[in-house]
Length: 114
Length: 114
Image (cartoon, rainbow over all chains, first blue to last red; front, side, top):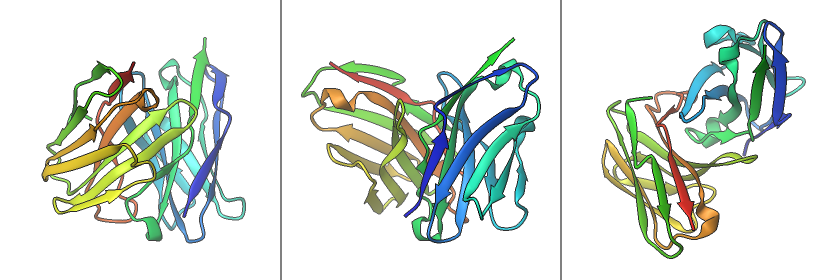
């Protein structure tokens, strides 16, 4: 079985500042990791996903995430926050023994201040 | 994702009532899922279906049932609603072509049980 832990339920960043959202995972087999974003009154949208191979993954809207096996982490970053980045972000994990079933973290609400 | 449609968008019902949430998709995906979202808990899997003849319980299936009427339709029922089933419910689909096939979400149904 897999699980993810997102550190920080709320993050406040200034417009133009670095966005850093933390995600740590637990998996007994190689994981497949995802970041999703949820804007108000909408469903979740895929930001990026990690499979085997390159550890730095680039996604939409300038976001990227780095897979670090030694730290069991998959942190999400964006160099410069925009007001439109205000949303809730979810880290999720699956693996070969859970094919198709994602385990989601509790989510991190991002507030962007002018 | 407009290709995954959930109805209704909002519903208020009373304790003990039977209620059905509906999901239809035009993506042609075989796999469909029902999740519920609660603040601070992220998304939790209720039921999932890999094809019309395959229905599986998720981690929180008690009090819920589902019906896969066709490849494109997957309904969630609460046989006797209770207040702790107040939540945001999401339907999602996946083509299941690989372990990291992403989920495509509808816009959700906000259910309130009084």
